[in-house]
Image (cartoon, rainbow, N blue to C red):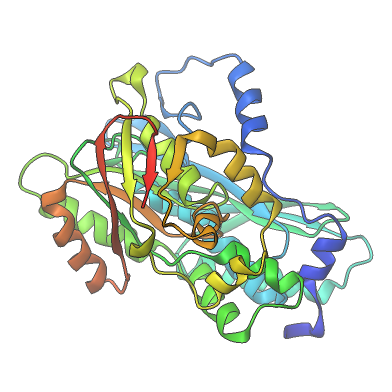
Length: 359
């Protein structure tokens, strides 16, 4: 591994900062006063992937921020993954990233060669995305942290929200699952080279291709907009993000719906099922399970390891898309042309209890 270091071991020893418990964060956000600004088209009320701020009749900003501790041992790859993960939120909203600010936390006595490789990796991925790094902020920190605040541009009439799914929609997903259990296994020196290589390739791949495929479908649609909801699946897991999507936004006329999901329809990274079966489960996975709670139920035939994988925190994960059923095959064809191995993984139905059913 590059630089002969164990970044994941360093992160683990330092406490490996993870996402806040989603239930705790949700409780805090609900207590905050609401700002009033008519130019805020998308805020944090529905846990969308990014915020959208109107600048003019046909132009808006889409903004997001994300950073985390090392999940792989190669500093250059860690920088690439952190950049791809931060950019993904802009793509998931339908935007085009244009500029970014780096966020760095690094030990005071850390090897600056490692820091250079992390930043170099991030810069390479930002160059690939044609997104300019125009500054940043760094602090001395026991935990090694890296990521970006990203700003993009978007047509306010073509924003993809994480809410708006309609009964009858097909659910599509664009990447395999299992990055969380694989990177947790890596911290215990139990990840296989094949599983790690597969996960790293996916985590460092931009979701630009998936976004381009969806834009192609939207532009070619003859009738109403066929893409009803999009979210990129990251730390809150497939089921955590599905829950947010299913809840809708009743205050703005987007009613809750329910999802039926087929666990056999997903692709899983090589070694992911084995890692879950062996118990390489992160604290974030357990938090996700507790947060989603009774919103999701499993049929008796769904094995425990697949249940865990649906709660597994993902890094730079795939898009979960709710699309009109008669456009689903067209979308799958567009994904394939753009090199994205998307799958149909479920459907949207009228709201029932529970909110999500997994078979």
